[in-house]
Length: 398
Ligand code: ATP
Ligand code: MG
Picture (cartoon, rainbow, N blue to C red):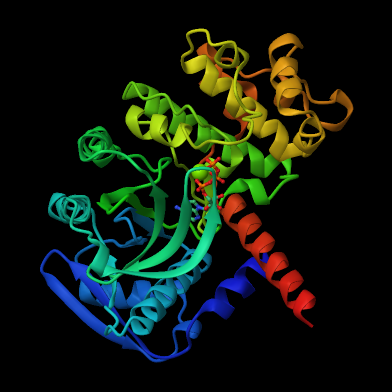
């Protein structure tokens, strides 16, 4: 926990910031000279000064996608300040004057509307190529390359996936219309989609940036952390299924985490045309694919559940590299012919060993046990792993 707080504090800027307290009767700005010394109670006192008639015990701020995050303790205050200072630095680096830190002391319908309004503006295709400043490359998959980028108008960091596609304008239009449903997706367990556009023969898909990256690089995740991750994945999948969307590509690299402990799914197959166009250039084997898909049979929700189960097994015990020793065809044959894999009884709890199954997925004992909304557990673990990775990189450079 200490490492997590220290890393958050280190990321924090020590220069003065302006906090804007939003109240039903108007805004109140106050300057904080040394944000790292600010504590939760001092801020509550300042809020009560502004709103003496209200009993304020907590307040909220908005993250980069307009979701409200509640602050109830010193630790959550530090997370908010760290998030704000990073945002402020990004704005400065891009030649912009930093916005004040907005905090909300009540949940009125008008403020909810303004958050919905923000989402609507962001998701109305208002991002275009000229407004995006590309930063570093985040990764490269079968379909394309993902970059961290800054959207100058929206003043926010994005992840932009660029996929080269040699297709007709007609097909481009079809893909754009199939992607429309992404504007309607609104779940804390699904990556927020901002916009997509074609420039020449490349499609760029702009989504929320997750500063912890994807789970494929973590491995050997302790059971109590994996439990919270599994709950988020199950909720994300259940949400997609409720919209009649099958994910079709559930795997650790499509599960993203951030330092605030959020876990979100990305890269689900809403556009058949996009999936087909990418499939033409696809090389490699999908070790997470359910047997019925490999055999070419009809498949449904169960296939997503299978892939989620295999992903959780890999994340907890790191066994897939052994499977990858197989030749691609052998691997597919093995998935179809053999019994489903099981975790070794001696090393894991009874709850995680039970097989996931669609009809009871929400009631699975492992999911029930960790369905407590404790994002702090994931947050601390992500911060610690990032810290270790940074230290290893620094050592390698010495
Ligand atoms: P495949 O192409 O087989 O699906 P993949 O999922 O690894 O493989 P991409 O979807 O292109 O490939 O993603 C590449 C990498 O970019 C991911 O592994 C992840 O680390 C990073 N990434 C993708 N989206 C985001 C995001 N929204 N925020 C932060 N990192 C991201
Ligand atoms: Mg992916």
